[in-house]
Amino acid sequence: MRALAELSFDFVWHLMFTDDDQLDQDLAVRSLENLSDYFSAMSDEEKRAFIAVAHERKARLFAVPDADGYSPMLQATEDQAQFLDHVVSGKFFQQFEEPAAVYASDRVVPIRSN
Image (cartoon, rainbow, N blue to C red; front, side, top):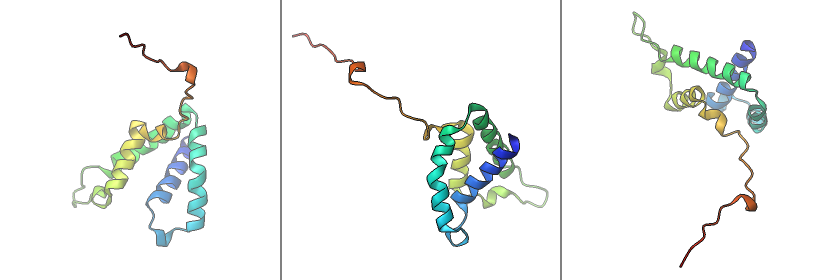
């Protein structure tokens, strides 16, 4: 499960943050079209594994600079940091959840008294 979560995370990261001139646009479009279906079908265990990978990548990316002053954080964009925050918090998966069906009979209509 762990290896698949890492592979999935790396693939999504690649699609989202690789420069357009380095990414095959046809592949990217086809892949992005299918991602929603894949994320919707993920089990809770798969989501937890994906979140664990994101948590580790976030920790590595925002680690304290080393003795030479190097920090991967200096290379991270705001979009990348936001993506990691959304995945770690679980909000990322909410966009792929099916909205609950609302039926007319389920609606509550207030009764006014005059």
